[in-house]
Length: 244
Image 1 (cartoon, rainbow, N blue to C red):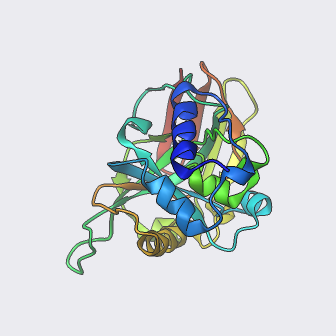
Image 2: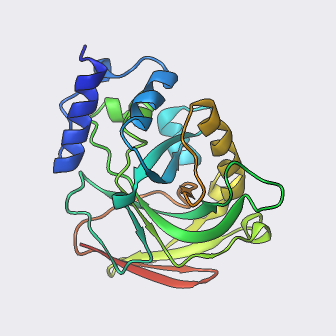
């Protein structure tokens, strides 16, 4: 079994070069606490958090009883950008989600817990090979398969809108339109955001004001490649981005 230092080094090198890591399921930590400790140690200044295991298709793969999460660094987060670089990522996917921005932290009854929300595209790009990437411990160790996060135009936080169904339509290039819904998220985007905050405190994550939480896919992810165009129709308008 590799040491944790060697495991982290190999994961970081694989991610930086956009390749599959030379690790096996036997190299992974054996507890969620150790897996989170490793993942959280790799990002010094967290800009956003991605959630996994919050919809039926991911729960079927990971057999999780609670969601899992991973940190994203500043250079992995793109706010309302026309182009998102993905050529450095290993087999990237794209998931349309709803993101919430953390307000004052620690919470203060005089200030809102969340200040903004945004339609976003979370771009998983795990570097783990099978069967490690189908393992819950593997996903947690690998920062929940962190790749990148695109945030659309931010809007003021609206709890009432988040507690209603949010429908989206998305298209890739000239492919048929696909539909997604917040009803696919257990407890909805707001509910899983609260669940994440409780888990983050349990595992010692460094929560800060201004961090974003990507709350999980409104529909299953799609493979993407450089030069993919994506358009998303949602209750606040239409967003478009170009993967390069």
